[in-house]
Length: 178
Image (tube, rainbow, N blue to C red):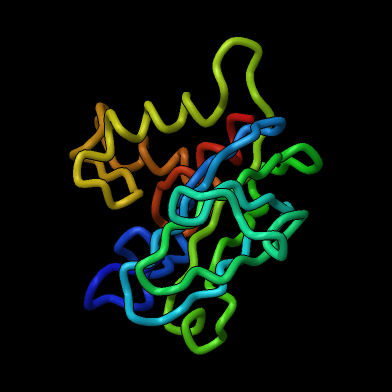
């Protein structure tokens, strides 16, 4: 969850309400890894699903860590891998959170948000949008600017601003395309 010198970040960044950090296709079974490089323990919590702990530092979990969980305590210097099945709900605009369950860590931005979406018959929505944003979001900030796209005018780009916040990000495309 955290990097050295940055004890309250996930993947090196703090929470941004305007950024969808991940897109999960409905029906996916995914392995998520929590690596704690800080000196503080972090109880990591995933909304929408319960999960099973696969490994702690590459080893099968001890008895009290088996079974369904929605939070796992990740100690300093530890890597925890969890297996989560996203089978129940999909909504291309309603976000779920993954965050540290310590309120003082969460309050300073130790959170990310994700959406669970329906898959297209041949290509998952996640693959489609990740490919799109990897192609056009050249600075990796999660937003599209006129310079990053092939649109002729800002007005053309803003036609994709589905939530009318004056910015175009992946959530806007999910809202109008699924």
